[in-house]
Image 1 (cartoon, rainbow, N blue to C red):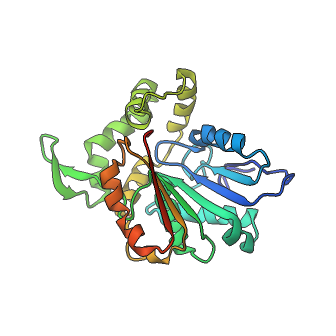
Image 2: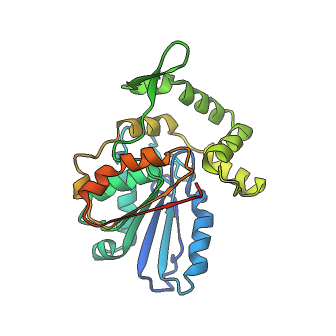
Length: 274
């Protein structure tokens, strides 16, 4: 595969050796990559002895091994075109609506929401894992002392100048493993169930491959599909951790009310692990 022309992905049924009932398309979050789904895939395969679930695990453009000729984006929609084209290359149209399940985590949830609402004739099944809501994920302006104001950042330049973003960009450029090691442990893995240090450092390698962190943050700042969420065809399954520190449970539940009110077929589950 020429990763300069299309997304990097892995396919559990790439040899077409096994028939399957469903195809799960995994879309990762920000500051992560497809590698962060690997243990999840292992758990599915333990339970799916008959290989009834085909799993496509991809890197969004500008993440991991999907370093395309143009990685810059201005909108979440800019991330969906490559995914849709990849899916069209792997499945027949009738298979997509019958078998394909979009599964997005965090940023990936916003990407899947956008794709499912723009291409509702194709995508009829959706799983959102600790997903960005229909309103996106917002940063707020800061005063001269660095205290948060009640005004949302309105421009990409304001995003770039935000202390949190500037700090993360600096640490990414420095390949600061120690910094992101502690970020991951405090924010993503805060329940005491940690991977080994070796596993975690392997995951961190892909953090430093990301080439569009500011672009993605700006895209999430602007993201809002409340006007078209009713186009999504169910069922939609929402899955969220009660201890999640990135999208906290009460706020997350509030953000997803637009989905609850707009979709006829919808399920919800919460769990203790973040």
